[in-house]
Image (cartoon, rainbow, N blue to C red; front, side):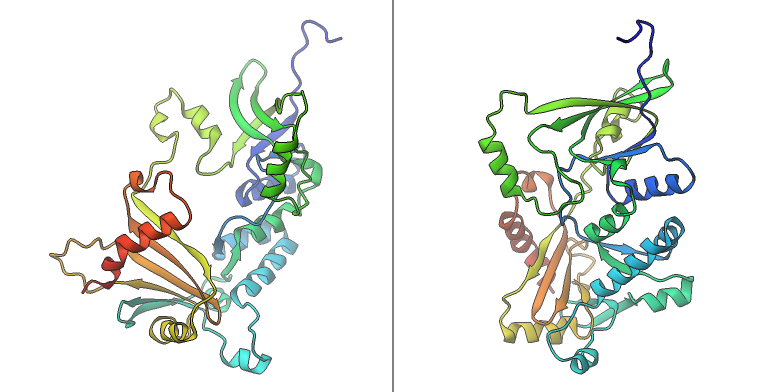
Length: 344
């Protein structure tokens, strides 16, 4: 039995909310400096392949190298594979037809406007360190594998943060779903299994519970929709910044269109892709008197012959996007912006 005057225990020196690359890198950096009593908490039930690509510029690679030299080497190697995916043809033919590592901007007629290099070596010679592209998931995984498994807790969705100055600590409250006890190092779980679990669960116990932890320092790394930020900015001079504000510019696209007819594929390659892997297409012929939105542009990329992905950046009202997903969003982006990308 606790003595009546006993104080709640402070569980950790540092608690980090969010197990993305920033939260994990912060934890690893603090551990490197001797702060061992750390916990990283994330709402995910299991780590899956989510997110898009990330560009690590020289400063980013230098920071990772400082945190852990092996992670640096692994991330470089993974990035090289990401930049140079295996080609279906022979090795000699593959090297011959290897796309150049540059990002090109062209107009709707295919004329080159400018370009800049993307290769590791070009950046290394200029800045003393290279540049690599890597998927968000691969970057997260490389960092996560460096953290002891008991320093990372999944199935912890932060819902409240309270300062407790009398105890010289911060209390954070999390919701944990009782239906799932996920292993943070397994990747087999999928949404279908989640749905099945929720359907067949007939336990009389509550489906979730509140778990509270106390730490001397709490670091928010829980992303653009940060719960921690919303809590601490509430009723403060910064309340307007509690939630992200829509910039007015949407990015809508598809990561991979595989079944492209050969004739169309060749036309796209000859007019826009050429020997690059990614190209930005803009309408640079818009006149000063035109009402066409000059922010509209399309990113077209190809990592395998005959396979393309695209991303349309354009100004769209938030009301038009609300409640839409998948093909609905793509149709909105294409139908409303095709005239902007072809108008002369």
